[in-house]
Length: 289
Image 1 (tube, one colour):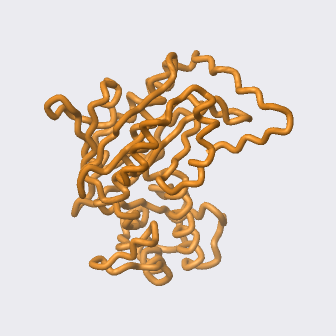
Image 2 (cartoon, rainbow, N blue to C red):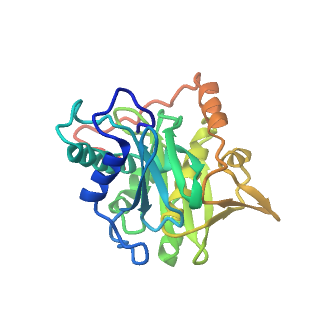
């Protein structure tokens, strides 16, 4: 993602914006095609870059990303249309690789939320997302073998209210062992609840933090504007959860996330020693995720 000029552009930002409008696939603002994850809604030429505003799944707020004149794929694109094509491809790549969760945010005119630079993430762990109809439900035995009780999450799935079940495991060559899981359910058209978040003892607090953060985002992508929980984890304050009686509530614009403190927590636990990978029987193939 680029937000400033790195070299003199052959095109003005107005020409760059026109090119994206010319080749971009736009959706009608009043009738978004919800089958597509990204729907470009507007393009604005700024002094140093072009701001592309887009709709993401069913997320209640419009999002935007700024693109400078450099292409991520071609050092010197032949035409401004080639640059625009690369910019739109890069937009799809950014959203597909987690920028919607991991970026800092800034509110712009009209309530549009601009995604800024990608922030710190605890890469010692890998998080897998399991939707209610996901294929990973057939591999519950691997998760249970690592000591987790799946009774509750199976009940939530059977209820029809489950939005997502997320699991986390140590990021190593075997994808083992699993060290935590959490689930979020829909409780109304606009509100969801993080039902539980369980991690093994001794882990950095960033594991539970990341689990709940991704769950909240996934709920938001289905149209949820508030996520509540009664989970007593002080680190959830860093995501923007606020007291509401005996519970906590999070507004899913995610403008209150304390990225600096999250980065500090990751750095402060750099002496954590991961558990050894689970040994697999000869001939066994472990498919993580």
